[in-house]
Length: 362
Ligand code: TXA
Ligand code: MG
Image 1 (cartoon, rainbow, N blue to C red):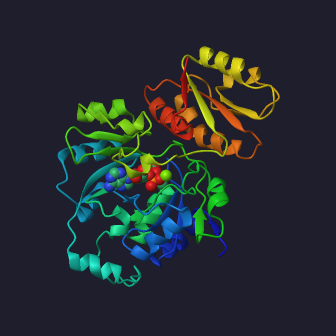
Image 2: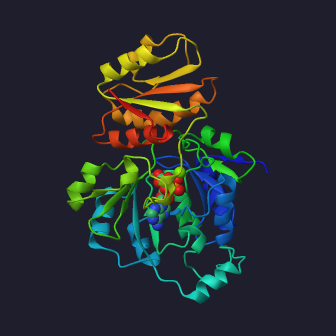
Image 3: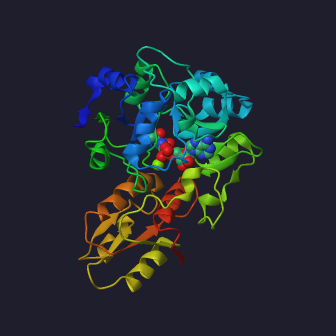
């Protein structure tokens, strides 16, 4: 299969692929997603094949506005409406209770094939989306092209990040093409992603609400609306044997370039000095550092993370920097890391996960 690159003028074609059970790379404000008709179990199972994604890792659904929540969720708490009002469309995914599906509905879906063109089969979320959980992640993305595609397709779009499982998430159409060429029908090029890390995930099915993954909507912003917010332990530390994070995807080594990563956390001046003192003199050690310190590491593969004080820039850069290291021969990567306030928590989390939580505090 040849993967088509589509642009602004080809959105009807993208929607047609989706309605016909195809896979389409979609730009969002966070990262590129690998989209399929979220009500078509055959299309959704192709996502898992294309990514090499474990079947027990559920997908989130992308909808055009909060009014679609009622179609697929039940017992929606007031907090969900407040968050939607404040942050949608935008980089926030809410975990809610999935609308009860009858055994007959689920059985009919299993017997597929369904094709959304003909609206054949029940209009409920198949088990393959939720990985059998009774909850579902709902997100309303902000990118205008993807919003138009969802509207035209007329179905919720199931979309994980568009990378091969375990690789850094794609923040450009070219990243996604590198992972998915020949495996999916098309990728819509909507330019580089504005946020650069995946959406914030908050679980609203328990009290207090729980942050499962930090992202563009910060913990502090969630607290302003929700009051107390628990932070899932998987956000800040490696899960032990037998421990199960609430977001199944958080248990996998993630975002990882081929070479092992060592994260050095602390004041920028101190972390730069530490890396300078420990980096080997060979070009086999790569460095990811804040712009101000780049000149200290001549003669080796180096990626700039953005200015030390600009965490938004760091969020936009982090996955590209990790991916770029795979195009070099480095055997080890040293990475400077911001403090965890604001969107810093998302940058820290992605770097720490890339490093398998190999973090040195200086
Ligand atoms: O920004 C984003 O969220 C991107 C763009 C494409 O929208 N999507 C994305 O999807 O990052 P994915 O599949 O790569 O990450 C979704 C995470 C996974 O860790 C998954 O385990 C978790 O959400 N998740 C999905 N459904 C869940 C549920 N019902 N309960 C808990 N965690 C869930
Ligand atoms: Mg992902």
